[in-house]
Length: 317
Image (cartoon, rainbow, N blue to C red; front, side, top):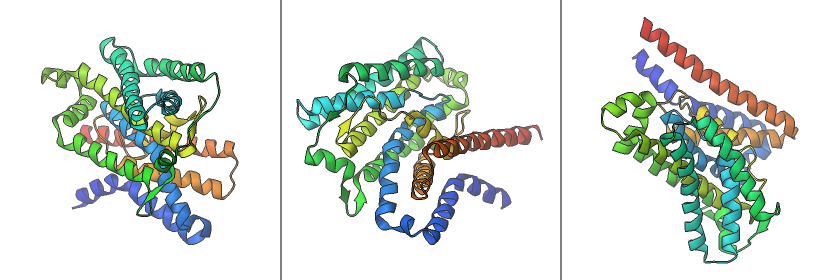
């Protein structure tokens, strides 16, 4: 019975932290418990959280993608430019295709040329951002169609549209991860690539496809982010990769791969955004906010390291 309780505690720790945090803030800060503020937290959590879904797949597989922020900026500016010259739905489709192309570029080099994901995505981090600056000449591009702005700012049944999209995508991604051969292959690669190869899994294709998924989810974040602001600029989403990785790790996804939860990533996205919102309500200086969020990331990494030591000790015993 104690072992069952221990497993349940580990699985729902981020949810417990969120509930404790919200309980404290709701009872002590009237501005925080304002309905508009709570809905704003859910809305803002979706913009990075959608990309964090793709990042969860990457980290479960044992890799990560540092280029997602630059990728988002590139797709956002390209998307807004397309929206000004062609049909909206065609523009959305082209943005998604561009996201898959950018992700497949990362994935192909990593999987087939066998170059470290850190090296590759750090390189494309600079490349994608530079291309965004080149095609806009460093300027912000604007598109203020009413329906387009509704996607980032509107509500359906009082729930923010971006958060509803976030939840739908998270449910679909979770089903694929937990209940499909593809999802089990991704999990398996995080545990042992060699074992997957012996089992006949095309590990190179799986690795490349996961980065393609990360690109597609980032494309969706780009659409919603541009919609939120009715514009896009080459300098947007500067710390985006940092935030996405932090959300995934806070959600308990193991940096060593092989274990993770889309549901926990969603909860972690809301928790992370809630902390940022809280600091804004208390007018905490931007630089101190960065220091705090950096400490949060370090603590999340430390927790993963501590759990890994615990597992190793358990195996030895």
